[in-house]
Length: 190
Image (tube, rainbow, N blue to C red; front, side, top):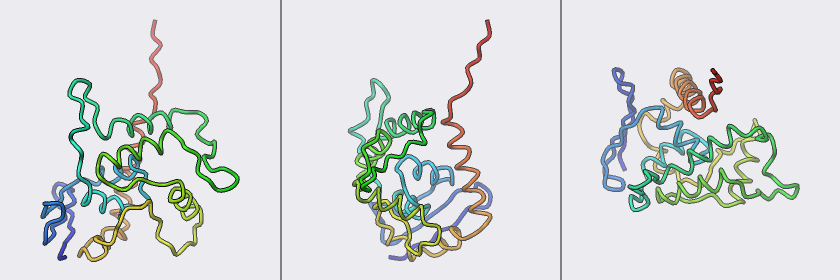
């Protein structure tokens, strides 16, 4: 596969061009905001996984309910909003024996993954991801189960992922994304 990654200086859009096409697409165009939202909503371990998920994902449009407007992503948004609003979010979902307890956010993320035809996270994968992310000096690249092999040879992607300016921009996008999901103070005017 031959592929290139670039960021358009005028629009800020990320553009991947690939030959041969992947899932019928020879290019993928998205904003950095999309990368961080996919990462959060699907429980992805890295920006590289987000890029791979965008390239591999195919939305199951049969899951869209035109009456309610609910789609593949709705449950993940709701679960993430609820987790952010929950005052008990410091409670660990990791049992003493290392088993990851079922939680609504992981279940919603897995439903979104299924709806995008991406692999779901098993309890073992989730536990390994938590363990890898908790060790600062780990040489192992964290993974939530998304195959990132197609991203390894995309010309320009590693430069983007390692660039301080790009990382700063992604951090700002992530902050905006989470802020948009945080509960807003109620206006109690009487």
